[in-house]
Length: 328
View 1 (cartoon, rainbow, N blue to C red):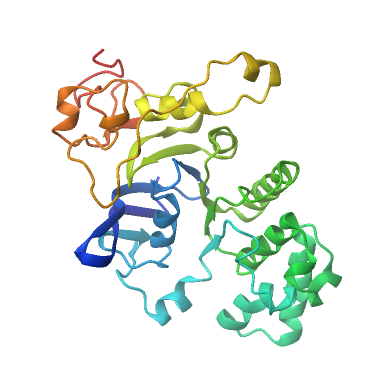
View 2 (cartoon, rainbow, N blue to C red):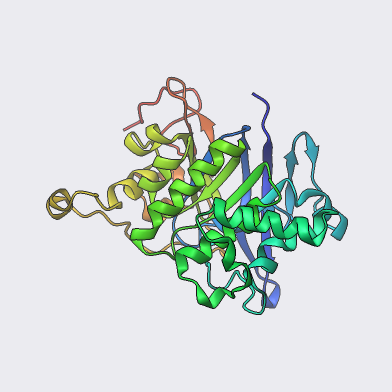
């Protein structure tokens, strides 16, 4: 199937003082099919959010390319590019507190996209805002209120309505539930699932919680220090992880059953994550990996498909011509 959105070698470096460079995203190639949900997971600082923002043009690309509906998008967006693409590509931000303008009413926040990107009249915009407030489980009478009058979960619903009112095809969900109470997270996830089905959305779902990503995603991509290390069907990646980093992430994920969690052997990743300014040679996970070999410190592994499973892994345990059985 032809990808709706595809990045090839996408790279984003940030220049900081004294000529140093932060390798935030480094050569990520990922294709997302129409109506597919791809979950992007990894530790804080792995580059997940930067990847999502660079795909949408919120960050200029350092290298590589992004193609949307067969069109290669500009390296550096101009105002006209945002005008042209905003109706098709949107983002739901992580923090429902800082992502909403406190000086604007809810009606102004949700309707802003229509005012900027459509020729609808003021009455038509108000009607659409009222409709979308109800679509996300809020009252149309809330249109004249301000963000501080709402709870975190309600604010995130407002953020969802703001993104969806333009009826986009592709949405980046940047950790949309991490700032919410556990009791509210399931409600927001169910809302996103319902909207995806009704609107035929394609989603990039960024999160820390692997079990939640497995639940909402068709495929799961695992990111470490700016690069993808594993990619495959969500259930397979979660239940049969191949990369040592993925395996440790899964093992460290809390069990939903309290009894199982109490009796579970805790797993943590030893060592410190390398600096994205001074990226080590070879495999970036080598200094923390329990399976490290000499070759890992010399050569950077490529993200390659495994022979007998629908999986891509960047690890020297799986040479390009091997089966999915590791070397040791």
